[in-house]
Length: 89
Image 1 (cartoon, rainbow, N blue to C red):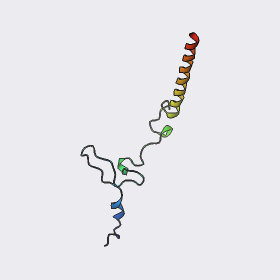
Image 2: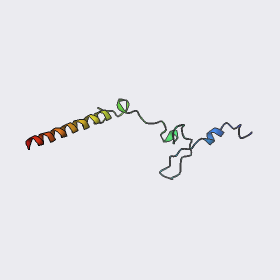
Image 3: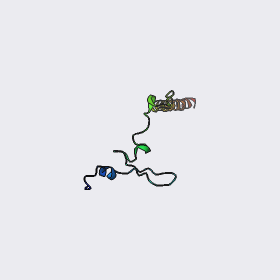
Image 4: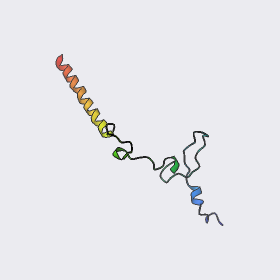
């Protein structure tokens, strides 16, 4: 059997996962997922969607949209206080 005939030659030539073990410090020897630098066991393509589709979603008070709203509201309150202080002087 020639080297070109081996069906596993592509798998052996695939880029390797860049994750390392906390215990031993050795790198993972698994092939990385296409487009990722880690293998499927170390998080390639994983994770939940953000927002209401996330399993721990409760009310959205800490969501990105609401955070921006709170920042704008805080800025308006800050400006109103500055104007109030100027009127008192």
